[in-house]
Every structure is written in C-alpha cells, then in structure tokens.
Length: 274
Figure 1 (cartoon, rainbow, N blue to C red):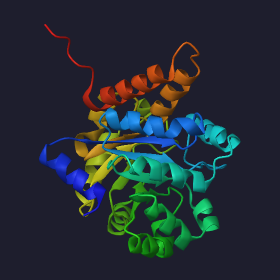
Figure 2 (figure 1 turned 180 degrees about the vertical axis):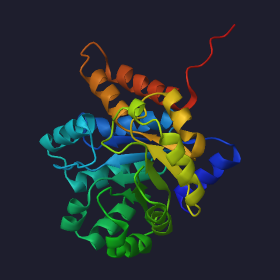
Figure 3 (figure 1 turned 90 degrees about the horizontal axis):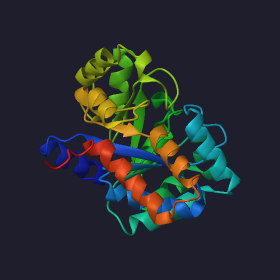
Figure 4 (figure 1 turned 60 degrees about the vertical axis):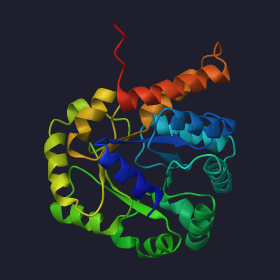
C-alpha cells in the first residue's frame, strides 16, 4: 500500500477527515520550504502538496500565482524541488505529492521526471491541465514508479466524466468546489453541496477530497460533509506571506504561527479550559 492509501485507511478507521495543504516550493524563500513543511507536519497535516513553480499556473488565483513568480525569481528549478522533497522525506513519512502543470514535466522528460520524483520520496502527482484521456504515457510511467496520479473534477463535470476520472485516478479524486481559480469565494457556490453529493455517489474507486476556496476550519467541515477530506492552498500561502512580511517576527515565531494555523484548520479553535 502507498503512504496515501495507508493514511486514508487510518483516517477512515477514526472517522476523521483528511487534510491536505499546498505550499509552493521556494516560497517565500528557498531556505524556508523544508522548515515550513515540517511546521505543517507538526500541525497534524495528513498529506502535503508541494507546488512546482511554473510561469503560467492556469488554475491558480493571485496568491499562488505570486508565490510561483517569487519562487521563479529565486531561481528555483525542478531539481531544487526534488532535492527539498528528498530532504523532507528523510525526516518524515507524511505523504508528499507534487502539484503543478504538465509542460515542465514534458520538458524534463516523463520517464526521468517520474524516476527522480520517486527517488526523492514523492508519493504522487497532481497536474490540473492534464486531461485523463491524454494521460496514458504519464499514467503508465507513474505506475511503474509507484507514484499516484490524481485527477480533478469540477461542478460542471458530467456523471460520465466523473466516473472516467475515478477510473483513471489513483490516490484520490480532487473535487474542485467552484468553477474558477484557487482562492475563490465559496459564497457564490450555493449548489456545491448538491455537486459533492453527486460526486460522492459516483466516485467509488478512490477517496474524494474537496478543494478551492477553503479558508477556515468551518469552511473545511462544511464542504467535506460529503467527501473524505479537504485541501487548502491559497489561505496558507496568504498566511505565510503575511508572516514573512512582518519584520518583528523571528523564524521560530513564523513557523510556530504556521503550525498553529495548520492545527486550527484541522481541529478548529480549542475550547478554553473552564
């Protein structure tokens, strides 16, 4: 079983929702990535998506676009991302997926990419702009290297499309909560519950997780009523950005704040002792 499979099975046995968090590699600075990954780990994250910086992140809103641009300004390369993934893996068993776009993977070479990702301890890939129907080469190569390949569905996905994604995906199916970009506003999506209930009935082979627009524990619990868990990206990126822009804070202060942010997303605000 993969690390993801084991994690989802353990969470299901505890009747607990899975929480995945997204962080762009090299943001806010290359030397901050691994310490931030460990802060997420201490905050009870269940799996992590490490973003591969790319100049044209089509599905991302402003926060992740800016994070990717800043990482590229720092000169972050794919090899840097593999190296930091390997460093994190040497110190943690938390599942780690690479999230990004297919062009850099093709440029790197599918076989070389999957081989190096697996060697770095990566557990899976999420490529939002890779259609399942055009994924044969990557699907086969990822499987050869024991990498899960996650595909996305959206509110406008047909039943047939959702079932196709479920058949193609491994690891989990990623349900985009709104038709739009990451970090969007959930208030404009009143039918999201109907969509997620429909998806829950159609996704039978994989866990179903929901993402996009989740900012708080309350958002996460509301959206994950019909799923196995939730994913948060932009809210974490915004939090990290604010912390690193506060010159009064030490590195330890910043990392402690990220750990507490992670724990609040997962568990909510603890009740004060009476």
